[in-house]
Amino acid sequence: MTRIINFREGGFVLPILQEFYDRVCDRGINRQDVTGLFVRLLTDYFKNPDNIKYEELKSRVWTPGEDTGILIESIGRFRPELAEKRPAILVRPGEWKKVIQGLQGDMIIEGPYQHERIYVLEIQGGHNIISVSKNPVETELLADEVFKFLDMLKAVLPATTPIAFFRVVGISDLKALPESKTHFYCVIPVVYHVSQRYNITLELSD
Image 1 (cartoon, rainbow, N blue to C red):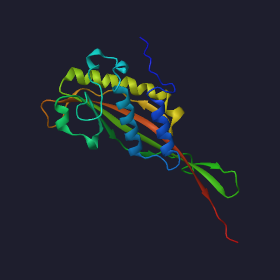
Image 2: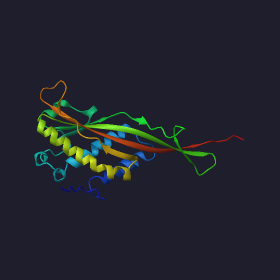
Image 3: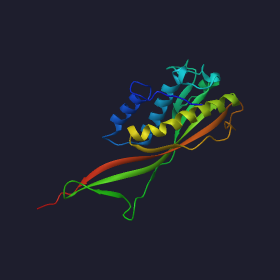
């Protein structure tokens, strides 16, 4: 089976990635930026039922406001009372670690001038995307829908953002939501590398 998602200019992804790039290219990128990016990509995906593969999920269309067919939020903004009538996709940031490069501990590139050095900061990061529903079958279908959409981003994010490497790890087993007898969840972990350059110029006094 071949699945086609429109990543071309004017499609539902590229304008989001361009806006993301413009925002972080000068000041750098942080975990909140990546969380916001995943939320925006997922909301844009689920606002069009034509994107959704499973017929059982085509009524779960995202719209702004509390009448949405599916909640898509960062985990810090999740309101459990709203999930009683619809499924949810939650984005939770994971740990960031600096990638140590070589014997000197950093990748150092000679700058164009005698006293300038260009450093590359490499960060290995991760996020967890969590599908939640009262129906265990719907939870599984939603996790698979998200998993396969995110997997296609491995060809797009490195070409258009400071995210130099992106992979979806898989889907966890189905579990009951802690402290809840009515909701189930699956976790879709993603891992990535963020690459950021910065200059250090040594000013020598006379």
